Amino acid sequence: MNRPETADVIEREVAIAAGGRTIRGTLRLPEGASGVVVFAHGSGSGRYSPRNQYVAQVLQEAGLATLLLDLLEEDEANDRSKVFDIELLVDRLQAAAGWLADHDETTGLRLGYFGASTGAGAALLAAAQAPDAVGAVVSRGGRPDLAANALPLVTAPTLLIVGGDDEIVVELNRQAFVKLQCDRQLEIVPGATHLFPEPGALEEVARLARGWFRRYLAPSRPS
Image 1 (tube, helix red, strand yellow):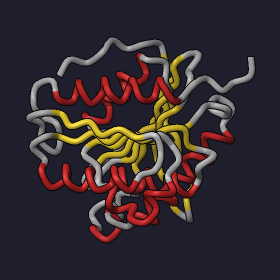
Image 2 (cartoon, helix red, strand yellow; image 1 turned 45 degrees about the horizontal axis):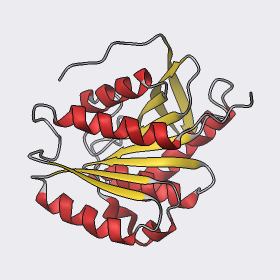
Image 3 (tube, rainbow, N blue to C red; image 1 turned 120 degrees about the vertical axis):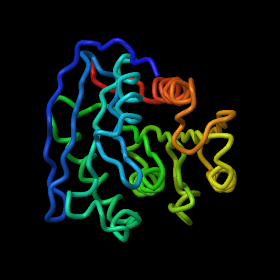
Image 4 (cartoon, helix red, strand yellow; image 1 turned 30 degrees about the horizontal axis):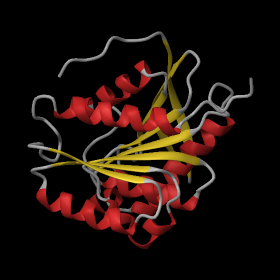
């Protein structure tokens, strides 16, 4: 996996209050950013996930700010009930979205969500609950079925990316695609498994995500 060249970015660690807890993240803000993408990780992962960090770097090169989060505190991360508590994850995502809206450097930037595995379900549910706030969603090997009855309420353009050899998740995403009523696309990466470790697979994920977010997260700052 070849990492992209690093653009000049402002980088800072952030702490966001969420329901009596504190979620931590890394904000990277390229000069003149045209939008901001919040990463919602899957189970057993966090803001240091090399896969999400790679995709985030590609997005930064495309002029998009990124916020990688630990949606769970350290003592919560090993609790499987918390990992699959989609409502809890949604609350954390919404806290992060509110923080970005109130933060001087990111206020006015169109918001996108990049969700992986269970994080994709949370991203879609968060988008359904705040249709005016979310400009686009990308799911990587996601569990959109966890958003259940909220899928028809999603208005943000949604890209579902699945590995061709991740058969169960492919079927779940096909079912979700039918339920979604927004501008949507299903991309199946041939030969890829759930975590996209195969040569070129994650690069394809990043390319697809970059194109989707650049298309829908247009600059919204006043001229």
